[in-house]
Image (cartoon, rainbow, N blue to C red):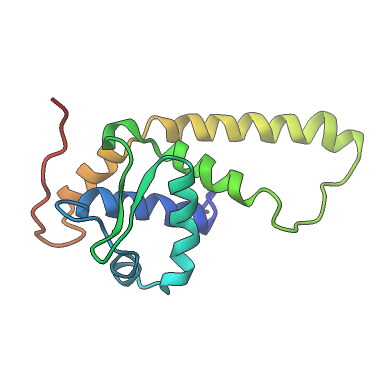
Length: 150
């Protein structure tokens, strides 16, 4: 059972893809969508959410696209999921039931479990996911440049 929304999984996959492919040029949304077999318009809203959250940086122009706004080791899966969740908060869902059971028992327990889940995602960096993707050769034998700071 997947606890994350499809949108959250897509956002994490997009950031890892950008981290692996954004050198020397930014990754075009069309190429990113093609690699994940998605319509570009479906991906664009997720990418813009990540730009507003400071995870990705949009580069304009004919050779534009997306690149990481920070180093791979400084971006966690938890940060990405929080950004996507914050952008989706009011998706027209019906309100929660108003009852003592929900307010005093269910909400606190679910909130605590959600915080534990996000804390675990905070310990997973994009660097970790990139390393795993490289070890498993998910994009074939693509030479991936090193990411370091001087």
